Length: 439
Ligand code: AMP
Ligand code: GLY
Image (cartoon, rainbow, N blue to C red; front, side):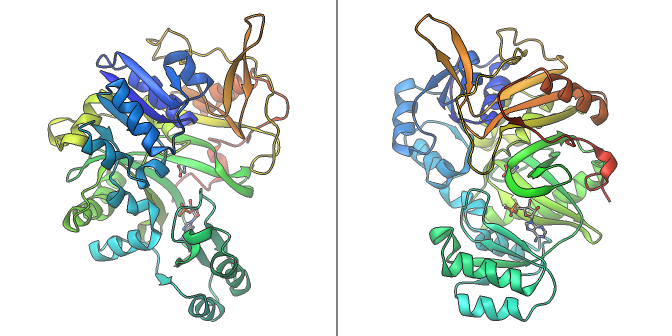
């Protein structure tokens, strides 16, 4: 099979790596890819946001399967477009991707389906929103309704902060049209977990869980980022919790989406808070998570191509999905300054890893390295080097019998990798601090 993967991050490197291990796959192209995907697939310089360009590329390549990493092309209708060209594509249609693209739509689906979440209100008008938050003393979360590159959520401990967030969204329009509608939510407390299940429009696979770290600094300090690390499976994850989440959250959501004519096909990603009143939904995403994918795809024991095809054709019932339970910890190495301004073009050394070489069969290696903001550059004398090209540079994944063992393996490799001004958190997978150890 000829597969086209859309995206340029470590998530997409992990997707390429896992797809390449499938006996069903002969060729993989990536739009646009990075230095990691370049070693195991063919990078094509088409932007992951260029829906026309991607549709043309898939057609030219005679792709048998297109796997979409990021949310933007899903929301912009890439899968609908490919379906119209009879090219199978893994991911939801535009209408189903609203589950991520509109937080008010997602909350309405959940309310109609009886899915537990925070108390919330939707506002289209800033005066009404301000009046509400100014008269509300408990902590609130203010969310831009639309896509805001992960920056549209403000956690506000009091009315002044909440009012500032409302003004930023609806007055200054810092997120553009994405903030013209806002969702104001109760601030939930508990342990956060990301839960992923394949979905064929009607049925869900067994779910898999991971925890991620959004803030730039140790101890969850500093500004939010696109993710500084992750681990899977969480030690608190068990069959009781998994069944409870399927029954109260995933199944009713998928049933409601089908009922309203938006059957959900693809990877369903539920961001949950495990509260003292049970699991509640923080958000839904319509894709694989980043950096969670880098720690969950190595757990996928089933053939990814068969599973994705089953999602597309509605045959998940005949295609059981198996997840392993070996511990994985992923540390994200970033450029100094990220998530603010940073420099690029720094040479990266110490990268050799099994998922980059042709030695693809070494599934048992104790670490994996997935590239993101990194590019291969060949100089005039023919020497190829890997240089940083973005803020999020690599995800270094350690593996072991326990999260502790995996964490040691991850940091052992991280310490062998160098580029100028490299930064990373030191507490990824450290469960002693308690916040990710479960209730
Ligand atoms: P989102 O983009 O909706 O995932 O929000 C980003 C982060 O904000 C989440 O991962 C949570 O850490 C936090 N968050 C979002 N909604 C809530 C909420 N209602 N209560 C507490 N934390 C929240
Ligand atoms: N891990 C957060 C995200 O993928 O949105």
